[in-house]
Image (cartoon, each protein chain N blue to C red):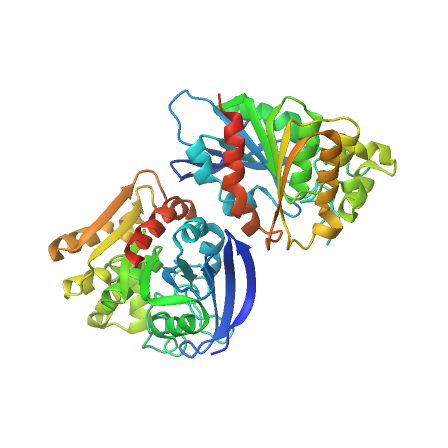
Length: 280
Length: 280
């Protein structure tokens, strides 16, 4: 697997890189960013995955996420993938921000014309970890995952489906029950078809209902988030965790919205929380 | 003076706002951003001005500057103005990133067709401070100023020309002697005309040579900055400060470039440095 360096900038005593490669999973070129904190030669470090929300690429969190100071302090590698396959050959839904390019929903699509390229589950769960392990000083026994909105949905579902892989899972304003809200019904219906039983492995609340478990969970959710009531419905996750006995810390943050101003406000806190669990 | 709120987002326990108004100085609409940290009702706080570099608006540092955590911690208001007049009526130099819109160089232009709108000196030195004092909980007896590149030039020259106004002055990769480098020769020549004696009040090194003083100075400059040798020439400032007896801390930062990754890496440090001097 050949990695091309798009850019590397020195930042917070480490290196903020952007890389591209030809993806087997999506059949397209893919771009992602990696921050490698300062470290001794030969050292390997734990990694925090960050999955982005609708319309985003790797660039949004890389520019606005304010994670580097905390990652440098705690010695954590930070990886930010794209949110969908890209390129002129990739089918898209013109003028729909919540489906197609920028809206891969971290699924392996099974319906035409999406199934050829929209394979973000395989990309994030299998291909990118291998690429990361082969090219960066990562200790793959110490992984954590987080994400925002659609990416919070990605972090929760990937964490729940892969017990033992991540030492810790958190999310910012996640979509917690896509099967029950408009964004998710639209995306899962078109990527996977009408059989809702097939959606459950891509729905955090349904996965928990079906027996998947996490040792604990950290979620921040703004109370002034325009999407809270219709699309995010944090209370569904709180209830599912309570019934399943999952120790979930769900913090309703007064006055915060859905933007990167919200994410950046609590990013250092999440990095610190994960770093504690990634130690040793 | 009427202020229009473009946006306000809760961030780091404070409020990140973007505002627009009709400017007397430039004869155009102008936009700027203000971060107000958490504070007790009725409290007034010190302010740190940040002047941006070529091609930038208020948005670059607002999104990528990573100043809010430090400003919230230290109780400092952060103001980021635009870098030039804006609007369809404003003359511009098409395809020139280093002159015209986005490149006001913090001068009051005296040459046609620039003299009508390109009055960023008056805007930053007089109009915007009045607007700020009237609309935000600012203690105008406690001001500090910094900036990047062209904005570092702005911070240094405005600081040097207004003794006593700022308790502290710092800069990131500033243009220190515009009269002696291509960016500055082009801009000052076209905004002010060929008489180089008129340029000296807009040249930090010349101002120091002519007797202007600052109690001290903090400058960070990346060694991998592509503009260092031709446009920035930090050594000229170091020499001028040495000869004038100005206590300048000029830190050459190994491997850092001219980007916001560099600025964000040292922003918290600058905020802390200013905050110490803005106390009480």
